[in-house]
Length: 84
Image (tube, rainbow, N blue to C red):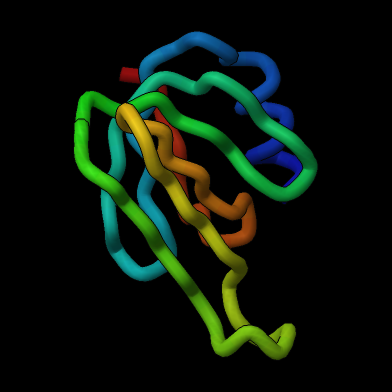
């Protein structure tokens, strides 16, 4: 997680492709990063959500995006992230 956090901080406002542990792929621009989540502005204009785990601490975290293409992903769910 620390590696993903540092990558996000060092590449704010850059376009990236993110692959999650469940095989999903997301593209967008990094608009914020905190110790738990990465926030992407996507070109999607639809509501997007992702939930990983059972809510009792043994899952992959929680991500939820809404509004004009803002996607929040838990850093723990990320498998890979690359600049595009």
